Length: 127
Length: 127
DNA sequence: CTGCATCCCACGGGATACTG
DNA sequence: CAGTATCCCGTGGGATGCAG
Image 1 (cartoon, protein in one colour):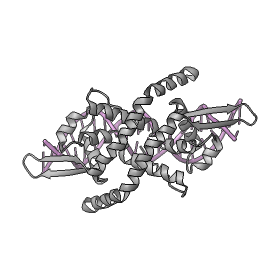
Image 2: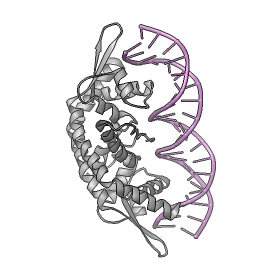
Image 3: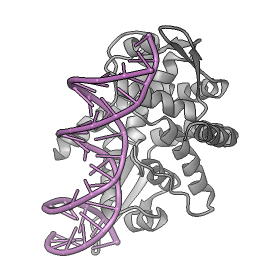
């Protein structure tokens, strides 16, 4: 997702929108949430992530990990062994985020039928 | 944001990730949340939205509105007058979504300093 | 006023190959 | 094992112009 934080006024609504957009921008990458969820319960290794997240490329896994680490959502631990061993783990901050995401999850579950129906109706009406 | 729902297994974690991704995909457009929030309290006209949302182009406003309408998050009402008058209003479903988004907002507010600090530290360390 | 059509570009992200 | 480097392409989205 491209940059989209459009905080320009001081209106409460706009400010709230911006806050939400901040979060989304941080987590909006195609693979961010999947990676975060895999790293939520204890440390995970690079290759484990690669296997667990179906369809991700090595390049995107690396980029996603770096981005999440930079934002303080993931902790990267390197063990200077041969062969190298690197572990990733969600931070407390990231785990707290999951609680709010689970609210979204519940919302999505409750309304998925309605959304699907709405789409079908819309597409049937206009094409 | 490109398509990223990668539901391929039946694992609980993956399923939850998919649900969240469903929501995000629906709302991930650069302008979706801003539009939704403007339409949250009563109907809003096209031009009002255009003025309220700083930086949005006419094209993107239309596309965003259509997408949200299709998903059942927005109701579009056309008054067959001259000149035309069209109003948009958030549905109940969309308003319910705001409650969960406000959780994200709070999270973002609480942790924004930490994220900023983390980024600076990361960038200082590596460049 | 409320759009749709067209053109264009940046960038997210896939495929592939190479490395400490 | 855990990455980095390159190349390439689709698509999201901006700018602009036309229309009912």
